[in-house]
Length: 217
Image 1 (cartoon, rainbow, N blue to C red):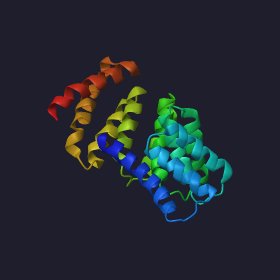
Image 2: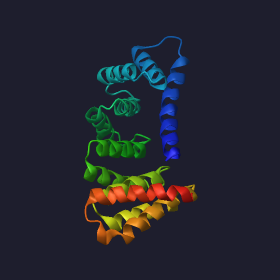
Image 3: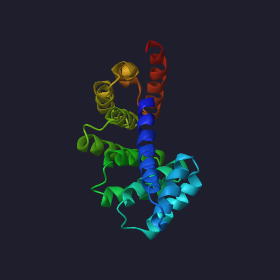
């Protein structure tokens, strides 16, 4: 999943850089410029407490700003990093409900699914991932989306659906060979399904299969 992490970081870095660089061309900074510039710079420097304060203040002061949804996304990511899951959910929900023109709605769906997973809302996370896959079939991280969906389906004892989702990971990956372990894990729990009745036991067995499969990559 290293590529997924890299892509998320690249996307966030891109937004931050655009906000910072764009404002450096101005001789004098307006208040909204300052909030964006300081917040984006703090995020890049991993000063998340400062970033959260700047982004939150920006949203309160400029709710109609042209870059409002970029700020909501950065705030959501900041809150997610800081473990403020309920607050992050509110930020991402705002984009999903009002930001139809936001250029990175696919990333927002994935971020919201990750929030729901960390909150323990597996069913909601699965619905978001299904919507993501349906709405954005060309999404750069579609392989990771199928991977998360497969694990959620596995944990809820939806074995056939989980196997189907996990088999789509290598089909959509630009590096199919790196996902051979998913097929191995899928075959493992599929052949053992008659003996594994509890979702937790299935998930533990699947993790064991993944661990064993790593040696064959």
